[in-house]
Image (cartoon, helix red, strand yellow):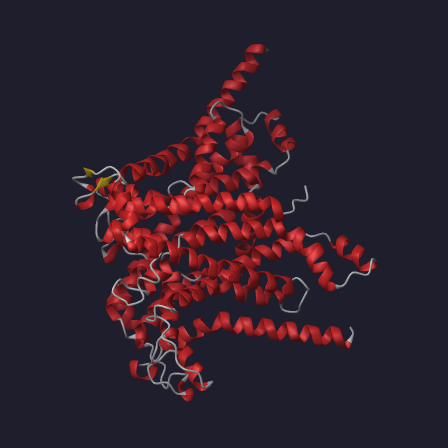
Amino acid sequence: MTVRGKAYRIIIHIFLIIGSFIMIMPFVWMILTSFKSVTEATQMNPFIFFPAKWRIENYFDVIRQNNFLRLYYNTFSMIFWRVVCAVAFSSMAGYAFARLQFPGRDFCFGIVLFQMMIPTQVFIVPQYLMVDKLGARNTIFALVFPGLVSAFGTFLMRQFFRSIPAELEQAARIDGCNIGQTFVLIMLPLVRSGLVALSIFTALFAFKDLMWPLIVNSSTDYATLASALAKIQSAYTVKYNILMAASVLAIWPMIIIYFIFQKQFMQSVTTSGLTM
Amino acid sequence: MIYGKKKTKINEWLWGWFLIAPTVIGLVILNIIPAIQTFYLSFFKSGDFGRGNIFVGLENYRKLINDTQVWYAVRNTLLYTLLVVPVSVFLAAVIAVLLNKNIKGKGIYRSIYYMPVIATPAAVTMVWRWLYNYHYGLINYVLKQLGLNPVNWIDDPRVALISIAIISIWSTTGYNMVLILAGLQEIPAVYYEASNIDGANAVTQFFKITIPLVSPTLFFVVTTSVIQCMQVFDVVYMMIDVARPSYDSTVSLVYLFYNNSFKYLNKGYGSAVVMVLLLIISIITVIQVKLQKKWVNYMG
């Protein structure tokens, strides 16, 4: 490599490292503050970036006072059911829209496209009123409710099914599989990467969503991690060490999952971009 | 034989209807009917929790036009979008181009830049509020060390929207970067090799090959970012309470919708606000699709 090429690469690295520092710094600061005492956190001195004593009790306090175990349970139940529904119903509908001929198909697909074009806030008030009428406020079901079906998932799965060569399907049908068997035994395994991408999307969306859990489950017993943080913030206003401990507790599960399934996370983003 | 064909055809119909039934029924109940209801509600003044609705005709819309807060929200939302989308997409494109050069540690950089995307906005905003803190925040501390005046990031009405935009840029750049990087990797190396032979330099290659060939991805990134920005809620909600002095200069349309529908319990007026959002998003989308023909280059 030429000297100029080498210098060029070093400049790129410096730029990328500065960028990485900006990306990581808020997380680092979150963790450092979460182990400090209030006085330590509000004392600004370059020598106390690190806590004098790592106060793990901040975490115990926030877990006990806000019933974090319950929040984890609520959040993961919501994510679990939303992923199950999205994967099951979207793959069924996606397959039918991509591969089968039947009357009303294009009209029904129009409904899918319509939902994708409308901002979700348009649906929220009537969805809330429905949950209220069912007497289902402050339940896990209420958290799952808007995610029972997924227009985005249907569209995504349709794209995946369309990309599979027709010969495989025809061969299965000649071998005597009916449509249901062909779908479950032959086609579903071929779109595994689509199902993974859809699961990640659904999980991440549900995990980050704030407005719906805030509206529908006002009781702290049925809050999610995101909506509980909003309440914790107004309760602890200036105790930044406690607030940071709560934030760490709210994000670590997804960060761990992300680092384990990094490749799948990246693929889920790129497939959504390339299939649209 | 003809009978058999007909039977398989009807069989296929039945399977089709059966497979789409849960999704289509679900979408009708959860989305189609609610969309109509929201439109309908926007002509009513609602009592407590939707009970006792009184038909008021276009009154909500008349009120809306004379409501300064609605105009603030429209301005703030558009300004926020104009701040976030260009900066986020530009930074994402630069980082993607750099990472596409087979740089060492590409995977590590990519995972770091993507990390903010994974974090809950509620948690992220709390940290940034702490970083922005006027007296004890890390950012003002650094400014002081550099000999600059501290900034009132949260309460200064002239700054607060920029502070919010910075948080959003920080948390969306990684997502856009991954998309653009994927688009860049789709460009066949042959184009670059051919232009090397023709003696084109890196800058010419960037503008004549990279930009046109990655333009479909850029279009997707820009349109989705714009739509998401227009719906901003979490960050503003977590950062600016209704009582803060910077509320008027940061409230977004969705935040205003939330406050009217669920805080002041006037779902009719809230619905009218959300109709304004729908209208603005539709207009922007139409403009983008029209402009697309001018700069987006589809290979196929």
